[in-house]
Image 1 (cartoon, one colour):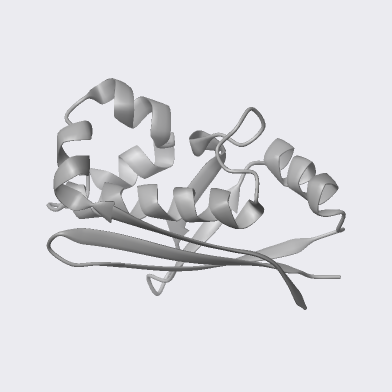
Image 2: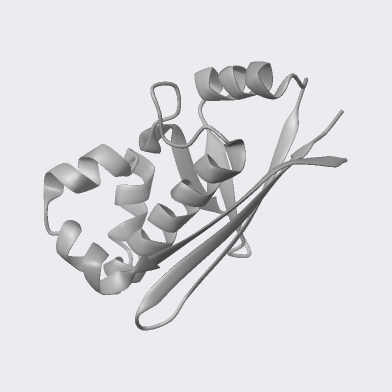
Length: 129
C-alpha cells in the first residue's frame, strides 16, 4: 500500500465548548449518528472536539479540504466494538474521492486523543490497489 495523504488537526476544547452550545453548529458539522452517540456521554465537549479534529484531519489528508464536494457531514467518526475510532464516508463521497485519487479503493487510518485543553486527530489515507 502507498500513502495518498496525511492530515493532522488540533482543537482547543474550550473554543469548541462554546461552539457546540449552538445547535446550528452541531447540525452543520455532525451526523445524526454522532449526535445520537453523544447523548450517552457526560463529556460532550471532548467527544465533539475529537470528532471535529478527525474530520478536519481527514479533509487535510485528502488534499482537498472541506469544500464543495467534501462536507463535514459526509465524514462520520465511528468506533468499533473495542472502541477504536474509524472514519466512515458516505457513498457519493467515496466515489468522488476514488475518482480524485485515481484508485479503485483506499483505506483511512485514524488516531484521536484528548486531554483537558486540547483534542488531536491524525489521519493517513492509503491506496489499496
